[in-house]
Image (cartoon, rainbow, N blue to C red; front, side, top):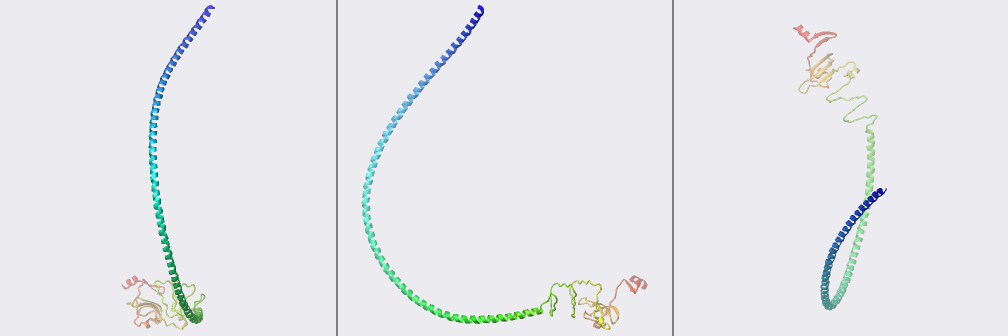
Length: 333
């Protein structure tokens, strides 16, 4: 038991000694740090005091310099004030002298102005007198001009009245003449309208006694031409009739004495040719002739008309074929 307690005591003592040793070491360290801090602060205090002393010395030097400058500025200001006082006194002296001169000049100007005013009053009076005289003369001149103008107006009025009378007469005559002309024109137009109504073409039927010309003519009915000659000068004539009737009207007589057929123009240097039924021959004939379209009998119109040769391939006599050209050539061969 005592051994255990001894051991515990020894251990506690060792622990306490260790703690005591640690405390002693830490305290020693803290004391050393505090001493070092105190030394540093003392050194800083010494440096700060030195800086304060230097600053105080600089401030005292600057203060002395400022005092010197202020004293110098005060001396300069007092000298400038004295100079300003002298200048003000001199200016006052000059102003007084100028005021005297100005007063003298004003008095002279007033005298000159009064003299000029008197001269102006005289000139104005003279101008007024001259203008009154001029106005009076102008009034007299205008009165004379008004009298002359009134005389001319009266004379012009007389002439105008006379001219108006002549104009009234002329206008009355002009009205009469125009009324007569209008009446005559109306009668002429009425006659022209009546004549136009008489000769104008009626849409339902019209008769023309003179020439009629135009561009194109289209008829939906029949065309009857009763003149002597019908001339067609178209380049190409188209006839729709399958069979054409020539020599119409021959049936009214007991016998027809006219040849019937076609005459073909061949030019001014050649005779015409005709394909006709010759009533005198009672046959179809083809002629070379000088007869023209107005001929009714080829041989009577041209006694020198000659029959033309005919060239064909086959020749028929009634229903019989007489043969071809080659057949005739062989037979005659």
